Image (cartoon, rainbow, N blue to C red; front, side, top):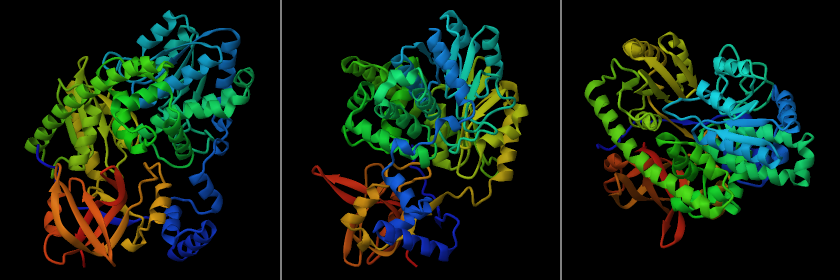
Length: 586
């Protein structure tokens, strides 16, 4: 496969909307209050952290900082219905989704409800046979299990017909979801979704498992659960944050406000006292216990949880995550390891095929977006491959395969292009769709694929400007390398966990000199040293081998866009510039 092409980037400095004088004054005030450098204060200010109290919550979050769960519309109704089910010993089914968010959400709800004496089972639909969300098959199985209450997690907000079917069978449904609501809202017993019209919950960016956590938080505060939980409420809630952490990071929701607080606390627990299933997952994936980062969740732990649902039965993920025996958990985690290896092989084969089709048949003068369909692509990997296609070509991408005589697929987008709204504009060409701003799922009749591709491309062509098709690097601030002191680096590390809306800070250093001889290492990675004002630092640019000519030559100077990372040599770590882009110094 050919290397990822070198791409032109737009460099844009971050701003939170304040004018330059307001920003200068606010940054100075924050710097004085926190007794830290103006550069670190500027990074905080750009993230909306503009006071001492907000900085305290940012760096030292506590469960008491979380929003009141009863602010979520429908919460009191949901809590009363579940309390009634416990009092009357009704059977409950927790109905999840097959991804990391859905399986962790199901694990969280099942674990809590079991701990307070509920008769509860979990159910995850088969990705290929049933597809996403609540299905009539799943409802029939709920009925067969003699359950009278179904609690969905990470799905259900668009399942109006299925929920109506459940009601006809005498099953009450409580929806815990975070996806965009459809019209009409399902006539469930209660609907918990921060995006629901007129919902007053102040934070709108929870993942599905996060909504489930708010339900648990509410239940634990009300009788009869409060007496069952006892004095260990804070400890119990912290325990469940491990599930929320995996789900929030993996679902790529904004890592700010309540999400960031939950993830920061949850990562501390995962690193200090992980539940058996997560501990086993860490062990079989070869990670160092106690040093798990958000990035490792995204790229190492989450794919293993996802793999069992992509290639088979996702119930195995919940089996692992709810397992209380470490030896058994190790056996389950090893299955995930093997499934993930198989998934990676299929993923790579599919990506190569997709790349060949794009390179041979697509003309980006006519095709603004990438819409691909192959009837034998594995439905479990096309979402991953769509993301890789976007990364390579920087175009919205839709990958579809044939399932039960219709085209089913996944859509992924580029910054600034709301792919959910784009699909909504051509929904007359679709059987169904759902999702988020940058990721969605869809189903199309085979006979309408051509019409859909044409309609979707027309919308993409209308909305995607040349600027939006040029990826942007958001710069936090300009810096001199001499300011990268050990104290600065230590404080900067506390900005973690990093993710959407709290990305690893990116700096610009101008006019730095290339020191020594740059070289290509690994798979097209550019490695070199830079010097500025007497400070020499290591630098590496992953997949930036194509920029070698810009760093070779006597006394070469460049402007660098970079983040701070750690390199490792001989067991010792050292600060390293992770190059995002570089330009010839002006």
